[in-house]
Length: 94
Image: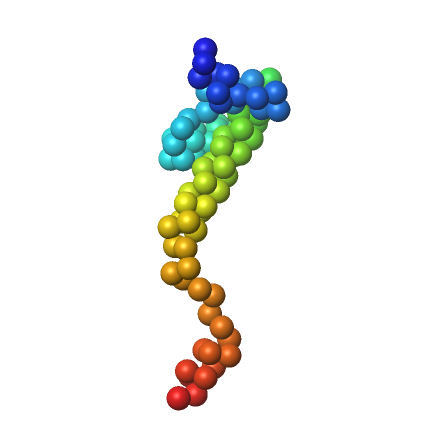
């Protein structure tokens, strides 16, 4: 019960409490839902439920990607700096 409280909030859909913890599982589930919906064999209610679940999975995937991007930025620190256009053109002329 504590897990549901930790992972769900008032703004999340009903099925959001059971979202996968890892990106690969969430993406696989999302791809499966998309394939089922594209087949067009689901009744309307199941299609709506699948769509709602798909939106929750897509948001979860985006959140996990955002977290990973932030971790990479922290690890990089100032190691990678944007290329200065003036410096690059000076080096090319040499």
